[in-house]
Image (tube, rainbow, N blue to C red; front, side, top):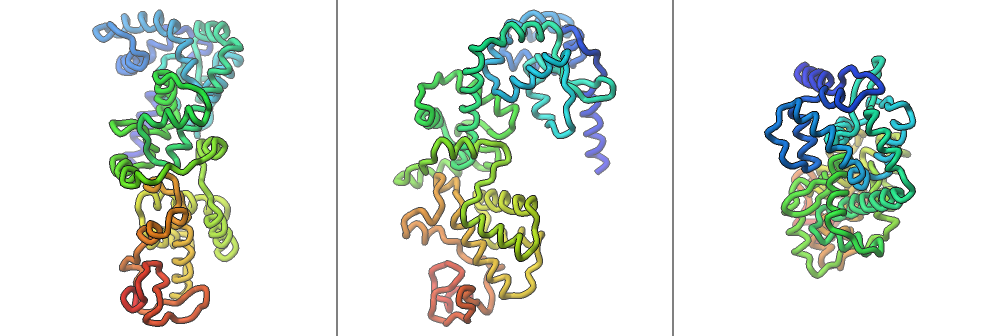
Amino acid sequence: MEKTKDVSKQLDSKVWKKIDVPSRFSDLLYMLTKQQLDTIRKTLDLKGLSSLNKGELVEELGRLIPLQMEQILHTFDLERYDLIKQISANTGMVVISDDFSYAKIESLLEYGIIFPGLYNDQKVLTMPLELIELFKELDVPELQPVLKRNEEWIKLTHGLLYYYGVLDTAIIEKVEALTNQEIDTSSYFEVINSASDYYQQINSDFYGFSDQRVSDPKQIIKDHQTRSNIDYYPFTKKQLLKAGELNFIDKTPAMERFLKLLQKEYKLNAKQTDDVARQFVNMTNLDASPAQMLSYLQTYITLPSFESVQQMTAEIIEVYNNIRMWMLKGHTSVELKPAEQKQLKPLPTKEEKRSKVVDIRSYKKIGRNEPCPCGSGKKYKKCCL
């Protein structure tokens, strides 16, 4: 714990230095480390500057960044544009809350146009006077369609990856189909890579773009290829834009019923049920079993009897089978043909096997030759008995 506090202090001292507002561009650049200045030149792909010392690099960045300002704005979305607009309208700074993430601050700083600092003991983001004046010149009506386009690209990409997990360059075709517009590939990649740094929702590698929750993109790609006879689930544009919102949780009807049960019978509040829903979606997509989901749920609730454990297990299996899965290209297991449904039914683990099984709907003991209620498809005597 103490080590974590020390790291946090070092980070604060590095980021939150006292500044004057308004400030000149050169003064803000000089406050950065040589490493931070090098990151800016790499982000903006400025050539021929790697051998410069700090003073020379500050001078060159002060000259070249304003020339890049228009292109930078053309990769931003409405959130970042609105932030710049507020700074520009408020004498060069905005006070930010503690929940404004360090990733967002770092992403903005890497473009060399917005700088963090302490002003009157408050955490602020500031822009130098020279860039404020330049922004006012560049803030023309023609910029708005570009920002709205970027906003749509980002949300659709977030939404597609939320449901599919991983997509290669075919993601551009899907965004084109959803927007009914041809996409310039280089512009799209610039926008999405910029958003990836800022929102931390997307990873990119050899396999393409992946949702940040994906731990093994190679495996998801294999899963997709294995089901080459199954099309990607045809989400609507409205569904994907909604899924592209930060902190979105896909609450299927089965999930909604389950959450209402937790609220009514176990008195969980809305935040707790949201946490459960989010974790269940993530666990299912990360190949967790219903037994593991039950174990997680028991950190919130106490199940007083064996029968209540069995009932909750049945409820969880229903939720599990109705969660949209990366490996199924956004389908739920119950949406696929019966043969694949059977294949995907979760088999009981050792934790789920018990000497006695009760059918929750009839609340009667199960006969030895009847189907096991765990969903394996086997006879009870050959499964959980």
